[in-house]
View (spheres, rainbow, N blue to C red):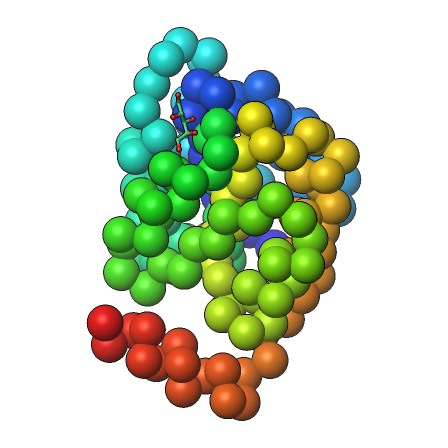
Length: 143
Ligand code: RB5
């Protein structure tokens, strides 16, 4: 898959670990920044990655900030984006199967690198189930 990734300064150190893991799994990853650990603002990168995914340039996106909260809120402001913030694999899987999430966010202050990888793997392996869930996605699109 083609993935877009972004973070803020707090998620900056975890980001290369996740990029390397995604590449090991055979995915193509584009990093939308930041490119240094200098203090910055999560809405910049949440918006960038979300717009790229919404435009169809990438299959999905991954975002990392301190908690995953601010950056996922930013992404969810972009039309057709369904971003989930997860700190465990169960919600990551269900967020794809039921909610067809197209962006996964997590917090570098919340999860360690191994748990983050597990969350990423679970999310990427899961498939949207459609059926009764499709109607609810349509309802979300109308909000
Ligand atoms: C930055 O201090 C911090 O607020 C940010 O990384 C994130 O946790 C926001 O939700």
